[in-house]
Image (tube, rainbow, N blue to C red; front, side, top):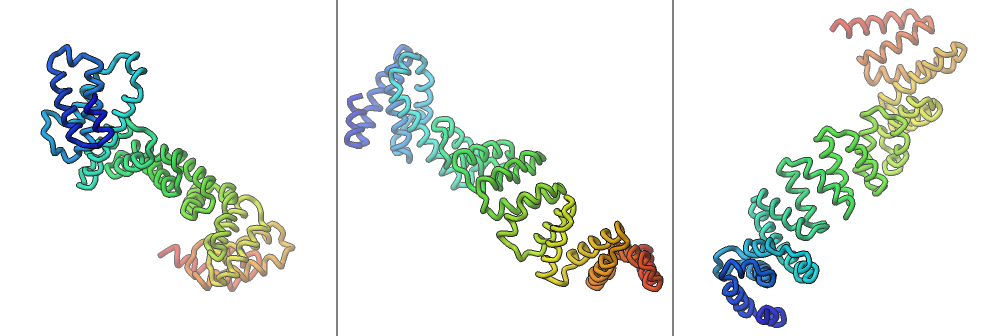
Length: 339
């Protein structure tokens, strides 16, 4: 211990090597190997060697990491463990550093499983290191250990949240076929990082795919604030309002879509259908029929072969009593259906 203490002051590795030789000599018999103080001293010395002699310039019967773990395993007395808590903490810290060096080398050499197991050791000895957890998450994901990776990313968003962690974790839950967990992560990610475009639009796409239009409306304004000239967004805002019964707002957003792009098919078709439904509910609203005709014809010019649009025109012309146009549209419709 005198030589080990001297090394601590001078950092002269020869003193550390002398301490090792002396403790090895004091570890000759079975009784020696059961001594708490012998094992504590030996663990202190070998854990330090595991770090400072990372290139293994000295000759060892067993690797210093293995020797340290062997001695630590024999430190079982609760009274001594409490009494020597600082020393035990030091040993664990040194072991963690040794495994960290080893794992970093394995990672650089593309030995992923070895690196993963090494980082797990570091994590068990020195938990709550975001850098280690980050590596564990990446390696687990790369090796296809998706459930393990998800667990590590859950730790990361708690300890050091970042938009990329939320996005990656949501993708992992999607791959694990856990849509509710994926949605939970995206929602909490948007709450934590409301200005993250990637999280916002992935959440918006998720709501849209689920056809959860009330949920779409809770975040569509955030999306429009980032890109108000995107016709897909303005159309989605209109359609979501229509699906939730807000016809006036739907009309407003459809018109905004066409203000950005007059030749937008979806905007023309949706607006024409909106007016057609209004007319069908009240045949006295002649202005609604004329507006429906205007937008549906424009949509038909943009895409003359859309069956659903042609069926809307059939209804429009039938209600208006325009037999000539009705016959023309029916002929086109029959042609498309037969082909």
